[in-house]
Amino acid sequence: MKGRDVIIEGVFKSFGDFKVLNNINLEIKKGEFFSLLGPSGCGKTTLLRIIAGFETPDVGSVGLEGTDVLPLPPNRRQVNTVFQNYALFPHLTVFENVAFSLRLKRASREEVNAKVKDYLRLVQLEGHAHKKPNQLSGGQKQRVAIARALINEPRVLLLDEPLSALDAKLRQHMLIELDQIHDKIGITFIYVTHDQQEALSVSDRIAVMNQGDVLQVGTPHDIYESPGTDFVARFIGEINLFDGTVVQAVQLDKPDPLGDIVYMAELDIPDLGRIKVTTVDQVKPGQTVSFTIRPEKVLISKEKPATKREDINLFQGMVDEPIYSGFQTKFYVKLKDQLMIRVVKQHAKYSDEGPDIIWKDEVYISWSANDGYIVEVKDDGSSNVVAGGK
Image 1 (cartoon, rainbow, N blue to C red):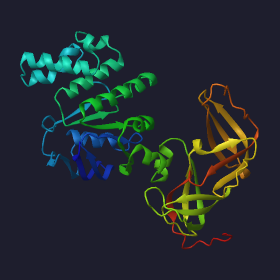
Image 2 (image 1 turned 90 degrees about the vertical axis):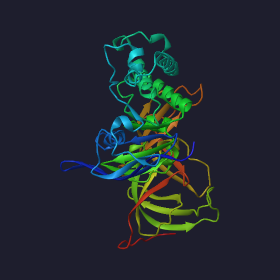
Image 3 (image 1 turned 135 degrees about the vertical axis):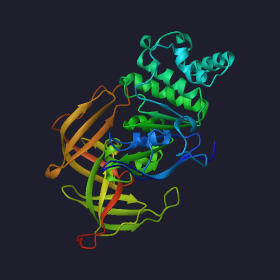
Image 4 (image 1 turned 90 degrees about the horizontal axis):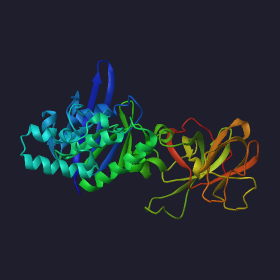
């Protein structure tokens, strides 16, 4: 599918003196699984409710396939919402819950029977049609709510933290089912969640929000590998994040796979020292920047690596805390001046029964300049003097 399904332009919303949304601008593609991700209170549910028609923005517009839907009531917007608490009618059977909106439209008995059976089959509840909600598990209740929302054949399905009431294993199972349902019906899903792993697992694109602002929009890969701000870097997965000063930056001969110019920058990080990092953003000596390296991209060993590559950052430290989790071990490595680096070592082999590196071991940690990332420039460096550059 091509085109844009939902266009949000210049949306502001306040409750009293509290500003909930601040100039939100988003374009959501037709058929896309799009997630609004952020901590509690960031404004993501309020934005979803504005799209649904349950809230009205102070300023701005919401378009659905080119039509401004703000003047329309919720039942005329061709969007349906799946809520966190299911919102099922306890006195009705599964069949009647799903059929409810068709009954309101006075659909024929044949149409109701056929469509309800189709949508119960879609959510794998064919054998539960005559049960009441109190006879169902949490996951089954959520599937009923999804079928009831989809039976009206909306252009857009809004999902407001639909899995948060489920336990961890059931949440993962339901997430896979939700993604499969999206693939089968092909309509636009807008999914609100505070769970980074949920958003990364199923989304085509993600909008990361905080304090009423959209900080970054991109694919899961973009958001994880190239965070746009310190907040995004910290919020998405685990991270090592430091401020440093640019000592020098040299343009490399070979561009990156997208054809962008690449620079090799040298940073001076307090309590760590000099490191090298490649970047497609031109940085200048004296600028203060945020530098990040993901724990799983840092190598750890007892022996000093034999590599002679100039783009490898290498430091020595001591294991302050190893945390074994079966499939991986997380190490907190203390470097000079008490600086702590997090390292994750995956256990990929059957023979790897446990970590060979233990508490208080002296270790070497290393990473390639290509695996680090400059998140943002914090200071233009106009008042800084950087000495000692190579």
